[in-house]
Length: 247
Length: 243
Image 1 (cartoon, helix red, strand yellow):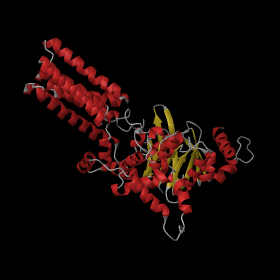
Image 2 (cartoon, each protein chain N blue to C red; image 1 turned 135 degrees about the vertical axis):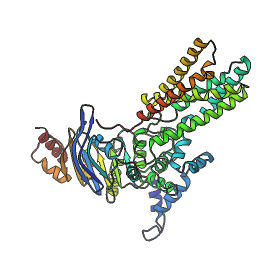
Image 3 (cartoon, rainbow over the protein chains, first blue to last red; image 1 turned 180 degrees about the vertical axis):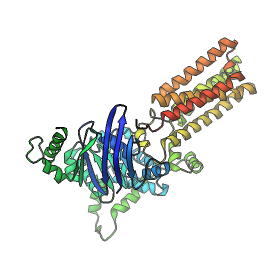
Image 4 (spheres, helix red, strand yellow; image 1 turned 180 degrees about the horizontal axis):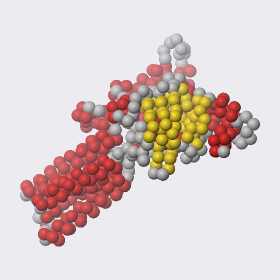
């Protein structure tokens, strides 16, 4: 298992963002669904080793991120796209991706080819030498995805990756997720159930810091049978599980 | 979001590009890598050898307060100091060097400087290491520039070196304020304000403008302030623990 989480909690003062989460994830694409404030981003940030847990155990790629050496090794094999990623306006696309490839401690000889492959992967080849300040929001999001995948991560964490992408790019992005899911653990936090339906092999639904459902998209759809709220089957399942959890 | 559309169309149009033959996708990536590859400059190559980390070296050469424009502005301020020193006899270089270095340190690195700060925190080359290397480089560079300017201004030896200690304190204050407030401008203002208060305070108590850099009684307080401020900066850039 690439992700092993047990009784994980995270508090910010009196607010409990993550409340005793248990989760196991191996290779494949896991969709992390939930309403605003459910704790998805806090959970992803803990998995990205940016935010330490308040309590509980977290093991990533068979290592304990609490210690410096293992944490550094995890970070070498990690791809992370934060919800709000800032960009260096004076960098070109290639320079930005290269910068983070180097900070991920990739061997310098491998970097140019990895950068080119990542940029081509997100369809930005024609913009590789364009300054970031000249790109649209959707293109910048794709640059963020490129830096996340540049090191061929074994654990890929994406927070709202499709925000700002046009429908064509979202379809292409789902294909990329499926491709990475064949060899890595991909965890995608999203509000868009259609992304989950199209790309994820497993779904975890969070509410109020807790996991209220974990299963396949089909199992989530089954939860929504006979439930009236929602346009799509997965939305009905989502609403039914949330309603049951809150009742 | 697969291969670039231009490349894919081009690949389709080429005769004999079947799956059993040349993998044009791989070839294209190789060509793109060669074309887009950035050639590191001499400073970056040297830093890479010295620090044994190409990532740290790259982070170092992109330090805002070591970029050409900033260096030019620093030199202009110190040159003005040299001119005023020669003209008036007051060692202006010694008075200008600490706040100029403090401003450089405040703009070296931190959450207020790095738009991708959260992402940087998830990197194998830690953000603290980047901060340390950049701050040391900016400090060293400003110290050398200041010493050269001080020597050029014809100041006596005691004044030429005496501002290095207060400069350490001002840099520490600027760094701490910038990291705590997550704003480099606050760091610059804190360093500048701290220095002005010290200089004017000493002038009032001893009746001379340069007492802030010539009084040996101030060395320990300066170093204490610098150490305390560095501790604050380290505390401000820690990974926050859960409550």
